[in-house]
Length: 453
Image (cartoon, rainbow, N blue to C red; front, top):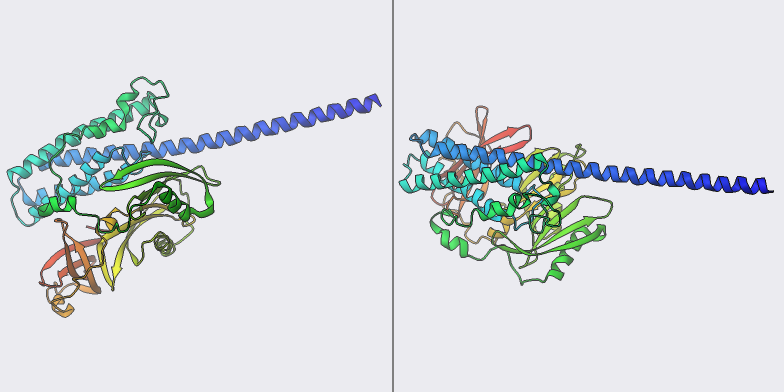
């Protein structure tokens, strides 16, 4: 009898030990998986930072060239490079784990570099000589880009040497001061942003800059909402799939006051950052960083997913235009369509994961700045009259009406013609009231998508 009891006791102890080992193994595996996921996330942040530094380095080099160029052709080419690199730099800033407040001035600076260089390139193309003021502005931009590059490189060096880690840079104030890290204050992203406090000039919006800056955002309609109401908006988007919502306060994105939230979904370690406009409760920015390793859906299916999502959050009548695919994520540009007129200023960008169609990003500031029902959509020339303005070699594939923005932040109603000359595809815009040629874009098909230049 005693032997039986001893056997049972040993058996129970053995089972308990096995359970403890299994539990410890499971905990270790979960910890290891979480650590691996965290390492991948930090690697993605570092990659975005290094790419940002490369783009800023290119901007700095091209700006240096632009200050001494005497050829209109060469100047236009250089300024076009600056425009493209600045746009790419802004996209990399959005992929860093920073809140809307951080690097706000830096993003604005890069956007202005893009717009200003584009406008000056148009001057060169039209054989207009750059003024001394233009050259002085380019020199000033070069100095600020040099300082930005040095500040970003300093942070990258400290990350690589282990002096700081991405954990030291949080989303509330740029630095987690609960950790004792030497030189951590030198690595504050917000410090880089503060370098632009004295940057007052060159807010380039063309001839109507003062009016543009003060005007009410056309796409923001309705009354102001509370933070509680904004949170309900977030809940309505993700419904029952939310595990936790963290409020990150009332901030400003560009000129739009927003409530920012951090969303933790059920069964996912990836966080969603979403900002809702104080006025009208519109989604201004949404971003979720996760690795997408495969493609299971087509571009057409992804387009439909993006359009349906936009409709669900209050953006109706959106039509997909151009797209770019990178790392199994497609970024689609949607524009508002009014009575079969494509309204290009009312732009929303949407990122869709090609593995399962999940929406990973939304950026709607173009739409919120510009959207309204256009009343002046009457044409003064017919589409046949507009065709007479085209190069006879252009083989037209499609045609229609479109409203396009200008570098002066105005809008023009045009006939849009898509066609080919030999192997090159073009978009040609003829003013629907004056018959003047307003713009020509080259359509470039790349392995990642369709771009225009």
